[in-house]
Image (tube, helix red, strand yellow):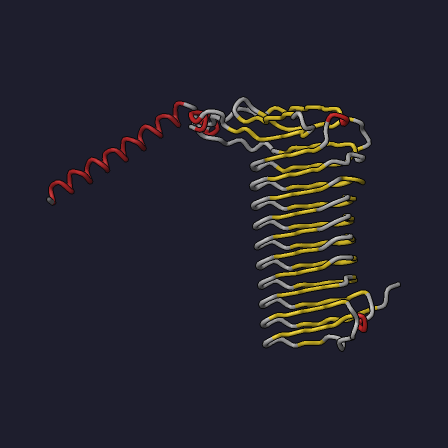
Length: 315
């Protein structure tokens, strides 16, 4: 038995040595240039244009490239991206008016064999007339999503795994949704006719200057939630585990805040007499105004975090 083990070890050692020798010979044959082993194809910038009148909605699915969607004063939709022979985009204008953009990487399995040292930047820029009034749905794995400067979209839905989401200067007639696992969500100057939903696991959520005629639902696991200059006409709910909830100049009617170890800090716009206020913390300090008898509700609960809420009159 011992002799068999020795033979196996000798054979394995010999194969390792042979592999190292072959690798060194190959390295020498290419002039000791590591990039010579690169089997990836160079990326080429491509542009595609579509008439706005033909498009009623836009759907983009990406892997690792950043998505930039921006409103312009042009009258056509333009898509700028980078492609190679084995890493391209499948762009289709469907019969229902949906413009679909999907990343098609490695069409055949054997094209995945080799080394890829391509450090070229990967972005997809979609320029759309700012008057576009359809839906925009975007998703990526690790790429960032940025959307700005539209004044009448129907709905917005953005999802990533580890990329950040940045939405700003948007007027949306219906819902806005932004969801990521480990990325941050950053919104500014957003107005919606219906609901807003924001989700993250380990990232932070920040929202400045916004209003919605519907409900606001925000959830996180360990990231901080920071909201400033916000007006919500419907119901508001914040759920967080270990991150803080910080509200500044926040106006709402029915507000629910729940955390485990995070602090809850708030400067609310309005009169506390119009709210039925409840605040509970197991080990944290509580400083809130006396509860009024109004029809509005403000419920706050945390396990070990502090609660500090104050109200200021609307200007």
